[in-house]
Image 1 (spheres, rainbow, N blue to C red):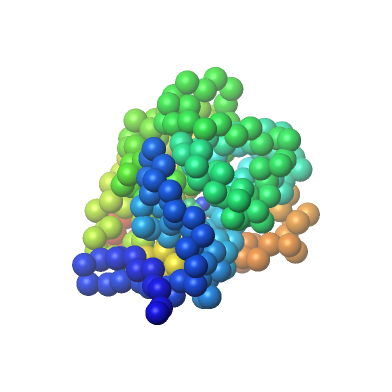
Image 2: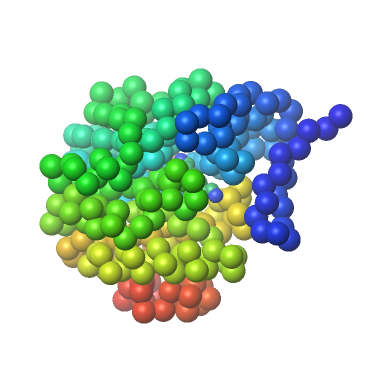
Length: 292
Ligand code: SPD
């Protein structure tokens, strides 16, 4: 008998993977956590039935959510990761020797433990002495934190369930306050191409645009996320420009080891299809970028 995992992307569209084994299943205090083995994408972590991480395509998401902001901040020393319990974003941040502090706040300790058990390569950064792992609510953490960060990376679940409050305006205001004079917040956003999510994306962009000095959007292709077209919101405090003349660096020392990110990907990710520009008309500053 064949076993299949199916995620409903819309009432009319489903995504399925053949499963060879269920490796882990747990109802945590926050969500349903499952890990399955699949021939197509390797091990897959599911939260509340939605794909979060797969062995085969996680590098796209984690490299994009981490290296795009950090390449724009050659002086960055302090980074905060909110969410990211599988460890992929921490792994990418730990590649930068210049980072002195990498704080990470994940609400669900069970996700961290499952990553340690089933995704040792993805969570390799957990062993880095600069990484301070806190199990707690990222929203509360950012409200109270004192020392400013250079970058805040919101590696959350979708805007339903335990990650919902990481998409509201009050949270973005606290993030703005928690950044230094020049800083960047990057948050993952929903797919722009599916009409069901268009309102959510526009609302998220409105909240950030009202709070930050400038908002940009960039795209990546993550096959196991709904539609495969995924977006990231890049919110600048001060004069940080995603394609500014100081966009650099640091990553060049380990660039050969990356699987997705490079300067061409960085520039290209900010070039948006017209339908996305229209959807976010008046909110994003991508048009000001020199990406001819
Ligand atoms: N619909 C899937 C969205 C998942 C975004 N976050 C993934 C976390 C991986 N570190």
